[in-house]
Image (cartoon, rainbow, N blue to C red):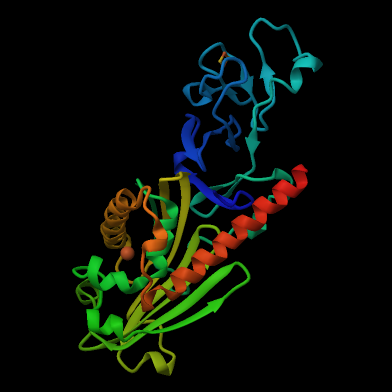
Length: 346
Ligand code: FES
Ligand SMILES: [Fe+2]
């Protein structure tokens, strides 16, 4: 089950063009396209006539034309042209020829989509992506398709102890530094956040390559989970002893938004937007894809192992506290939403 009354990233902005884009989101087939005025729209990817995917059609005068028998729909899902029908669509057909449309909103690098009740879609709830960055480092964004539940990726991001193992050759600190990290975890109105701090730690290999650290570093990770599927990250490293003096700039600094959209129950789209410290855009993009692919490869295998498995048999360890709070918060929101939906239906 998914939280439906929420904004999810449907696509990177440059993916949505005059050519229709087919994408499955939360198990629903969606077509994204731009009309002739450049306005972005999202419709159910199923024509009302014979059910052909609208994504096999093309941009028309007023919206998108179905590639099978030529019905045309505007961005709100209204059928505006039926071949052979003279003039306006007859009143008796208006409702039946409508296809579902979804609210969309373009912000920063992404096109966001609201998958729930359209009347309560409020774009002001969409987070900044990436978050404000005082040093204005180069920004990059991207997407990785993952054959695993979005939950496993959220869990990966809420338990950073994996850095010392899965990413030991790139961004991981030593296992000892990781084991000694302090964790400060706090609930928020929209999820949970934590500060993970390693003082006097060995810099990661990636950090050593890109920055001029002479010895040990203070390394911090501020992560905020914003339900249902965004994680806002600010992490970095400064020379040992500087963190407690309030120094945050001059060493490593990464501001990242991870925003994960379920495709199906067992697959997801991992979007990310980041301002890449002091390493430059290309180096940042390369490192991001390398590290995030390491995560993706592991959770794809985890998905296979856990498929059909009784997860109550799995064991929690000390590093799981933030992850468990994230799971609980999200489950609670999903349960609340489905309870409200069934009350409304009664
Ligand atoms: S299926 Fe779309 S016009 Fe016939
Ligand atoms: Fe990771």
